[in-house]
Image 1 (tube, rainbow, N blue to C red):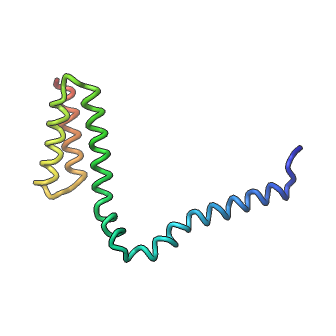
Image 2 (image 1 turned 30 degrees about the horizontal axis):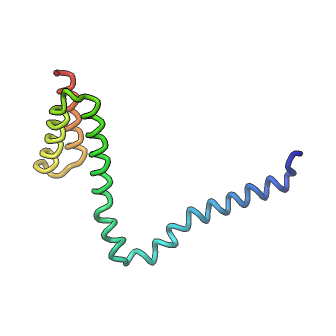
Image 3 (image 1 turned 45 degrees about the vertical axis):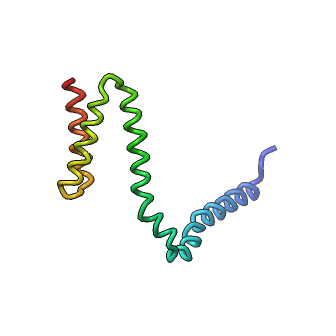
Length: 109
């Protein structure tokens, strides 16, 4: 039994309304929370926390992939941190420098 045109139009319309409501809901909820100290603290700490989790997972995988050469990961990480701290906290520069050192050391050793 095939669905009728009216049934299909109603299904698409209902799906569209649900999609719009689900996309608008976070904005409607966020407006009263903007003045919340908790949300302000989350906005300040969450990006750094997510980057820390990403870095730990990536470093763990790279060390596990090359158990005989963990020093390469350590040196590249140290270069990334030092460039970031001492050359103006420019993320792209520090990421580029750390990645470059990592690739260079992998190819040399």
